Amino acid sequence: MKKSFVMLAAVLGLATQSQAVKLGADTQSLDLAGGINFESAAGVSEQLRVGYGYFIMDYFEVGGVINVQHNDAVTTFGFGPKAEYNFELDLPVVVPFVGSTITFQHAKVVNTTMIISPDTGLIVAQEDSDIKNALNLDVYGGLKFFVTDQFAITTALLLSAATSDLYERRDGATSKTGARIELGLRYYF
Image (tube, rainbow, N blue to C red):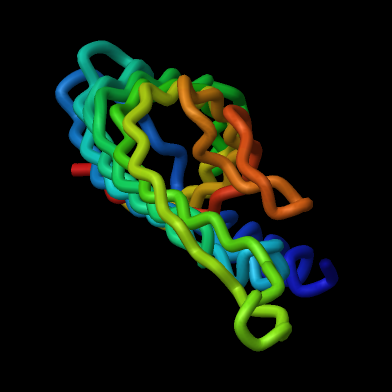
């Protein structure tokens, strides 16, 4: 936790040297974001999202995203449209934003159960997998810290809901909803 605060302070220190940024119409953006959880119930859990956006009017961006999530229990690939609104504040380098994506998700869910082998009497792991397709809605909000006029570091809280069980819970099962924090990079041109 202390590392997160130190990293945030360093980003804010760099960002204070930037000029005010304007996210006007006809601006384009490239987006790279993700997260990693070393203590998930299904091993190390990684998530990566890549996106492109176009500002159709000042501070309002539409575009698309591709995402991949993986751990020992669930591997998911998704793609779909996004919409995002950026708020103009009097702060020169910090821009709050909210957004949403609707993605088609294709997932492979691996179920591991421990059974007693009738032949040997030993406990063994038995795995079976299930392929699931779902629609997923992500709603998110966060802050962009502009290091330069074209480059920003982002942090966001994402809340997700899907039509199938795609998200790992702490007890190792899966559910239709999930929440996570993402760190990311944005480049505007």
